[in-house]
Image (cartoon, rainbow, N blue to C red; front, side, top):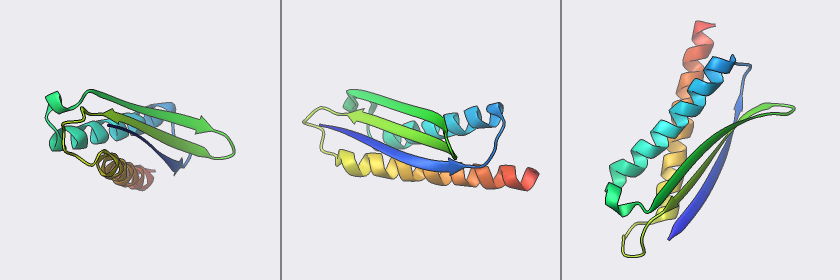
Length: 102
């Protein structure tokens, strides 16, 4: 069973260092949530990719790919959606902190 999920988050103007920090934060939160819910042996494959897109707006795109063996009883869609939601909340909180500092 596998699931791929993507969320787009609009970003304010940030330094290159801040952008990297935001992407790493999102990745860490997602991986932590997955492994808080599943044993390492229950995860066949996991990929978390954070990309910064600089078009008309600055966007953080987070993509999650999670694959578990068929015998693992978990709603993979829900788990990925929960992880993405937690990442969004963590990024939003971090952005508010950065806005206060500026």
